[in-house]
Image (cartoon, rainbow, N blue to C red; front, side, top):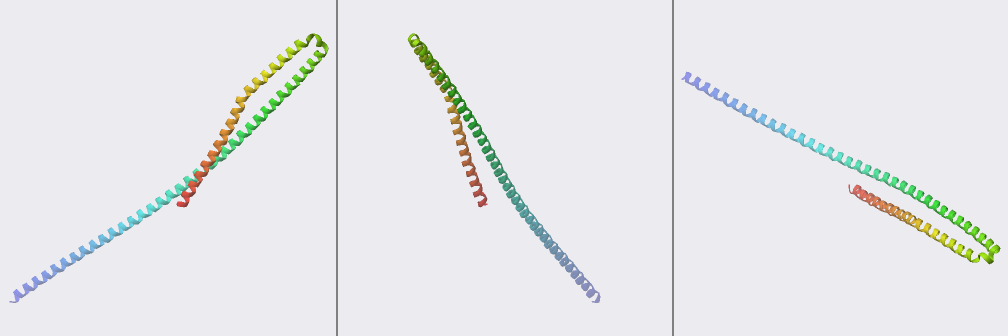
Length: 200
C-alpha cells in the first residue's frame, strides 16, 4: 500500500509539473505573441508617421517650388515688359528723328524750289522787260514748260514720299497697338496670379 501510494504521488507530481510546464509555455507564447503584435503596431505607427512626414515635406517642397516658379515667371514678365517699353521708346525716338529729318529735307527742298522759282521769275521778268516785243511768246511757252516740269517734279516727289509716310504711320500705329495688347496681357496675368496666390 505504501509503495502504491508513493507511485501515485509521483504520478500526480509529474502530472502537476507537466501542467505547470504547459502553462508556462502557453504564457510565454502569449507574451511573445503580444510583444510581436506590439512591435508590429509600433513599426506600423512609425511607418505611418514617416509617411505623413514625407507627404508633408513633399507638399511643402512643391508649394515652395510653385511659389519660386511663380516669382520667376513674374520677374521674367517684368523684365520683358521693361525691355518692350525700352524698345518701344527707342523705336518712337528713332521714328521721331526720322520724321524730323524728313520734314527738314522737305523744307529745304521747298526753300530751294522757292529760290529757284524766284530767280527764274526775276530772270524771265528781266528778259521780258528787255526783249518784250520779240520774245514774249517764247518766254511764255518756256515759263509754262518750266512750271509744268516743276509741278510734275513736285508731284513725283510727293508720290514717292507718300508710301514711306503711310508706312511709317502704319508702323507707328502697329507698335502702339502691340504695346496696348502687351499691357492688357500683363495686367490679366498679374490679376490671375493675384487670384491664384490669394486662393492658396
